[in-house]
Length: 339
Image (cartoon, rainbow, N blue to C red; front, side):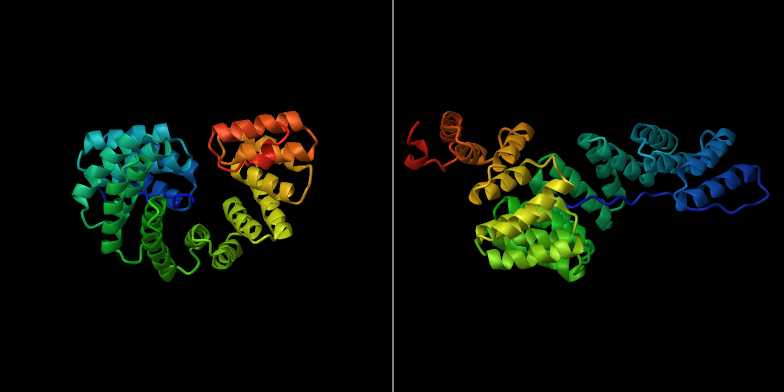
């Protein structure tokens, strides 16, 4: 399961009315910049906002908006610099604090992101999306109690906030509170029946309960909505494998690896499936899983089984010994015979 993708609502302020005041040229550049920004023409937007700033270095609205354009170009450090300049001019500019928190989040500077969002929640105590984003920052910091409080606040302020339900469900799932997590994910689906992450996560819950028929229904829905998602393919493959549908499982694992060859669990699962089918190619996938993450759960037991398929008893014994030392809980006397 993955945390719900964070959506950024960048705040850009209001248009200015052109008048016969000394700032007319400055404001004209600003409006042109806003038009370009709304069209996601970030290069032109930066150019127009820069012209406005040349005419008025304290023009904090232009600084904030140029930061948004730079953010759009993924130039997060430069965006932070502009947001910070805007705040220096106007330290009550909530838009700039909020936007800067998004840039800090992208740079994984979660403490700074939290600091900015704490300021914004004080200014906008009734904003669901601010609580949602702060909750996600708390998640990244491992402060899941605080994250739950913020997700609940986001839901209270906006009962149709699907992202808050999904993230709340994620935390409850990790705490093995499956009934509560299920309720949260189903609430997300009530808001948006095409919420594919909620479908996938409900499949995970049913898999944890051993209800693979029900799990497959949810995975089918998730994949119908997002056919190329590697995790959904991997999860459905695992459920199929548990129902001994090895051909269907192999097809899903193959696609999962195709869409994300860096996922050690998908590589491992493909290897397990091929071991169960007696296919010597299993060793290739299990070896790749080890290269990607040597601590992948249950890896060494299945690596040993794959080595046996290749007739390499000595290396298989080493793998089984390693499996026992890691308490994988799968090695029996049968595997250790001959070691």
